[in-house]
Length: 126
Length: 285
View (cartoon, rainbow over the protein chains, first blue to last red):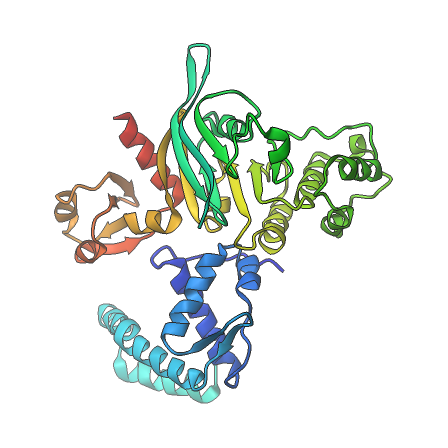
């Protein structure tokens, strides 16, 4: 299947692809040593240059999440999942959360009602 | 990476009319090059010069050979899809496959059949009975079935519908590009190829407007939507263009540090079309 992808023009494509791969790893809850999709298959699916895909993987290698095995491809590194979760949590709190706070302030939303709604959502699991 | 194609001051004139003016480019092995520009920019002419199909002034080397002198030898390693298909209409698909197999030492019938799988094309059909889009598909299948080092595509997806286009690019990435083979795509449909490219050559009215690895292009150009009250500050930094969108100015910068621009607004990646427009406008002024 060829996926129709809308890229966000505020961030480089390799960054966005890195985020997609990261999301995939977190959603699947894969054990360490799990093989990841090949550079070529991702390039085909998203119709992008293989070097861009390689750059996305390299970012995850640099974070210690992915391991490059020569001639074999990309694998989830030992402890990669935990490291990724830690990185993503930090990134959310440092980058995304201040924006949420700014929006909440701008719209004059009631923090307590939001907290209540959030707790409900999390408990229902949606 | 070794250089696969190199031209120096390549110039092409038809009488007094200069259609290519001092084109100097270098293409590394393994790259995916976009030769982009509007209709009539000189893209097809440049490709024909590179392939040794027409005479020109200046230097040109492909795979370390002069394409005018060693065209036959070169054609064993180079595959080319012109912007108009010249398949012999009176042949059946099967006869055409045989013909190409007899003509080209690096053509594989089995590979051609692999590319024809999943299409509506059947062996017994005459080329004249195929629709325009199907003819393009057949031509592309024949070309991809050649084990070449360099593939030159001139407006390859013209005549293909959206679905077939996607299938085509997917095939190119899966079956052709392996990091060693080199691909040159000439097209005016910038949006369609922009994420595939590793090198960009923009031409306009016979001249190069931009010639650079794609990554460098993305680092160079930056679009900024100013935060309230920051328009004047951004204007003072000499943007290369200013457009109005939704009643708000949008600035385009060339080579300005992003860390500085970030202070005044949100940064966006401009489309190739926007970069092209700005680059050509600056050349004209």
